[in-house]
Image 1 (cartoon, one colour):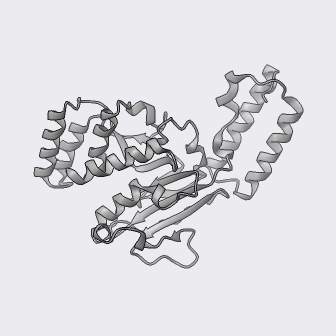
Image 2 (cartoon, helix red, strand yellow):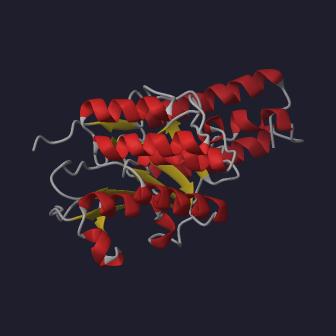
Image 3 (cartoon, rainbow, N blue to C red):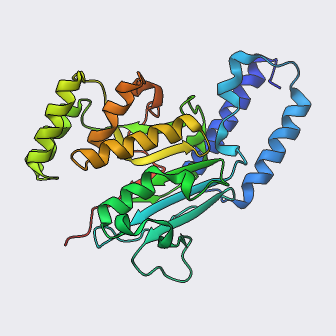
Length: 289
């Protein structure tokens, strides 16, 4: 149901935009969410009549969705400290896989690491990537899952990120600095992120397979998924194999998987948002070793 009067339509959209900004600033809490949604329905019932699909995206923002979302992270070793979420929406549950102590009053629910195969758990990098890539193995009862690296802190309601979910059931931010996997490999070599020989061999493999330059890059630190989507599950399984077989750099391994399936980066990218400046999450530096 949508407003049929142009003035009321504009007022309605402005009201929803103002509510969204309050969420972004964390000035309204989770307890108000159901109240606001209920009021929206009553308001709509009074002033709305026949649907007009052209307004669909404008006045039905999904940050009021009641879908259950598993928000999770994985912190192994001493690279990152555990950051408590500033905002805990009523439809989101927070889970952590870690070998660190978690304070008793934490919003993070500790997940049993026994669910991770022993040969993978013994390597902190493999353990993190396994958990990152396979939410369906840990949270099958949740409609959606949102993974975030340990360096990120949740600041607001993440529910809005499940909107505009593509057919592949996967959404990520564009890489904030690069849009070419070959440039990413060169940067990893220059910064000492991984084995230079393995990275060069990975670049050679990509080139020999026909991987084009400037295909696009996605940021692997924040991943939104439709947990039970079989297309997403297949992509994750292929990403894992590509990761294991080559340079052990997950962001380097993903573009070729997408290219192989003719999936454009733009189809999965969270539109008009930068992961480093997005108010929903805060980036913290890694702990010094």
